[in-house]
Image (tube, rainbow, N blue to C red):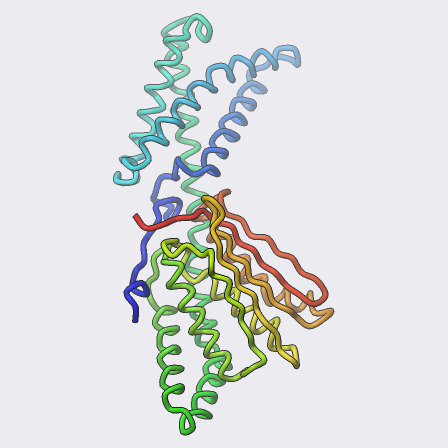
Length: 346
């Protein structure tokens, strides 16, 4: 097996609920800004004595929140590599200490604008800043706890897909059919099957080399071609594929499996699956396009929705708003396009 097939790495974004959010992630930063302003709005509503008093309350809170939040986000962005080395609770204390220090500094420097009673308002600003920070960290931890189940579900789903009886029986029968006529090809098929089972039952990291995923998918498609013959055609468009890119483990293979079983197999004449892998700036785009039987959109949707839901949750867990997937379907085609950040080793 090539060396790249053995390489894998973990990404410290939201990969565990006992990990701080990645403060260099665009989605995390947007959530902090939106939730922080929502808390200010809620506080203004609670403190206001009437409609006329609400706007001044919002402006007062926003003038203090904006500089504190922007300075904290900048410092957290710069300190992200250091935070990744800390244990979770040490990181929580570090983030809260940073927020407290920035809140006190901004409140003291702008005391003529923000404060009326210096000491009381300083302590109140400090308490509100730390409380908001704690609530935001609790939100991200709870969100990561919920989404982290997607990885285990994805691994279980892929393992079940690998050992489905009809896939196993069909592959074994196909190997037996060519064993005497072409023993070398039969041996290669058995090696491909062993690799698929090995990967399915392995304790995978979050991210693996894209080249490894492509090689695994080629092995899977070769096994399917044993039983489908010339009915299965695959057009790989990898001319613009970055060799050093990393993607979530077992992301592409389930899409190809759905394309085979719900797209090509029901067609009497078969068809061709188009797979496009390309980099566009800081984004990696993966596109899988396959023909399907006419007026079979609902049936195909039912077959794909579990895999696509799982992929969506894994992308949200690892990349938040920086990753997305889009589906296009018609009477005779199905297309899935996934966009995710271009991550490379190192």
